[in-house]
Image (cartoon, rainbow over all chains, first blue to last red; front, side, top):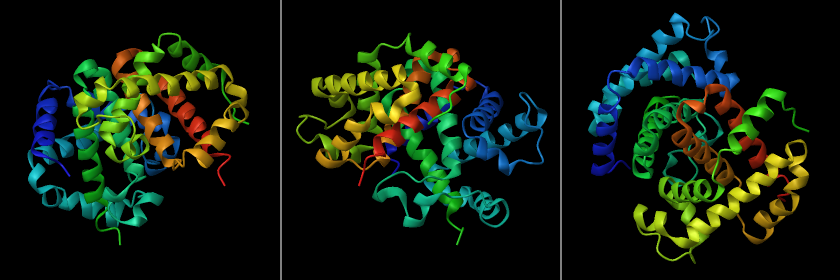
Amino acid sequence: MLTCEDKQLIQKIWGKLGGAEEEIGAEALWRMFHAYPPTKTYFPHFDLSQGSDQIRGHGKKVVAALGNAIKNLDNLSQALSELSNLHAYNLRVDPGPGWRHGSCSGGAKPHFSLQFLSQCLQVVLATRLGKDYTPEVHSAVDKFMSAVASVLAEKYR
Amino acid sequence: MVNWTAEEKQLITGLWAKVSVAECGAEALARLLIVYPWTQRFFSDFGNLSSPTAIIGNPKVRAHGKKVLTSFGEAIKNLDNIKKCFAQLSKLHCDKLHVDPENFRLLGDILIIVLAANHGKDFSPACQAAWQKMVRVVAHALAHEYH
């Protein structure tokens, strides 16, 4: 569960990105396609070459959605409601084997394909922030991304 | 038998040469216990794990982190035979330590983030991809002897 401190850390760290949000989104996607090739199967209609306009455009969208979620940390379900519908009924990104066991609070983190994006986004943040990506920040961001993934998969069935 | 390209091997060994095993290991284990607090279940005799500060400063955590990452280094020296290299460790984790293999995956992902934070731009997408494969292979090898 996101504590008050977690929320503050997340908002603070997001504030440190200094307008580089688009680049960060594009880089996170690029890393995801590289490290987890099966994720490309959701983008057969994209030009997946490095620096493509579509990757940049989609990265910008993703980061904007996360930015919106960060402004609404007390009500993620509502803030992400439309995206949740989109992922459940339209995009249907595989939620992974861990998802079937219900909420992720019980044990292992969910294996959402969305989780690969979480890992790659965190790597991008860590490469840019270095020491500022402290264990506390790391923990808060990981929890946040898990919460986002949970909300996005809420309506799958 | 895992297929490593020459580039993957280079990316793995090249970065490893720059890693301080003691520091990196300590940091990775500490972060595992902080980010996924339920993993503390395996370390009940480690003393004070009550806060991130306590965990980071805990000498047993630091020592054990170094031990874990040193083992990891052995895998890097034996990229073509990691399953064999970790057969005994796998049995140990199953029979004596009773660790759910999911935890190996968690630690692997944490290690990646520690490497990213410590190496910045050098931790390129290609480098990350090679290392994600590495941690996946290690986790698989450690789970291989489970029964």
